[in-house]
Image 1 (tube, rainbow, N blue to C red):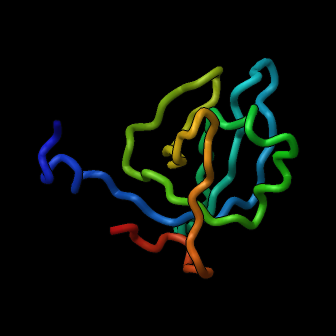
Image 2: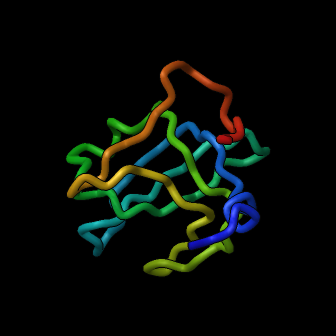
Image 3: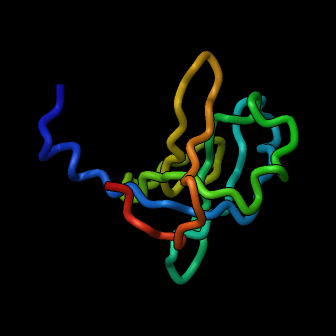
Length: 107
């Protein structure tokens, strides 16, 4: 178990996916460019490719992202966060019930 203090260290924000494409050489990864309400979009790699036959279908969708993880190199590309999904044998996308501003804090 983790403490509430540890959980509160996670900065979870709503992001708007502005582009999505497959990562060459990977069956699992998509490269997402995400508007998190910052000056520049972030590149986030996510292991959801098998659940998304057409990555372009994600463009314009909102989802929660952990934004304060240390950047990580994956297949030679930097991932600057993590997309959150439910797991029901395959990723289940989480989305707000109405439009929210990119960068809105998830509490």
